[in-house]
Image: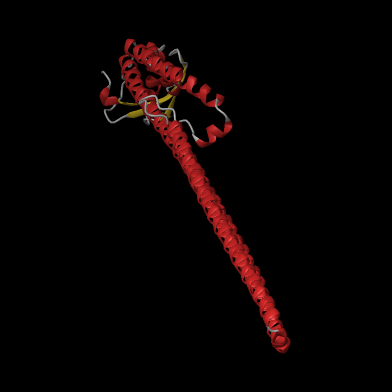
Length: 320
């Protein structure tokens, strides 16, 4: 009985220690934001203190966010550099066009001056050549118009090309954003699946522990009941007197109904020996041995299990 009490006290102390460890952790988990709880489930382990997985995942998330921000900054820098290069090229093109226009204007002024000088020197020749010059001028104007049209067409084509390139760049950026979103969604889905699997594993482990504990408890109770049955059998055998006519081969089973205190409520034959006198002597011995103080040496669970117990007696095991 002293061993049973010591075991119960040790068990209670162990349970209290586990509860004392688990309750603050559970309270802290409930106080975290919902999003944090979802992304970093708390695993309470009383046997070993290790690095908090939630902190590790949070650090990884911050690192990933930092890398994404750095990548976006680099992309913005590249876009800015490209825009600056495009602006520089446009400025150079405009400056070149201006220089060419000024040179052309200067050439035209020189030609005009030359024509005026020639006109003064040879009016008649100028008149004769007027038609040729007019034809030449018309052709030149036509060529200039064609050149302007060509340049306008080239400008429109360049503008259209630039617009296409801009749209293509925007489409690439959109595809990249969509791909990043898809990967993020897949990662989130994988994370949720992983967390669900971890939760399922924890639940299964807890259920396995619970079943193992229940099986162990049942085994302890059955072992206690068996031991108690052996003690009751010995106590009853001490109070038994074999009636006349008993043979060593006789065997009887007695079903006892008891209170947790060890008091006997009922004793009846569950399997007869075939000899009424031998059967009655078994029941009388059970009542004579009651109450059974041996009950008090066992746990409440064992006593409750042993309230209905069947004991087998063989005549050869009894005293004469």
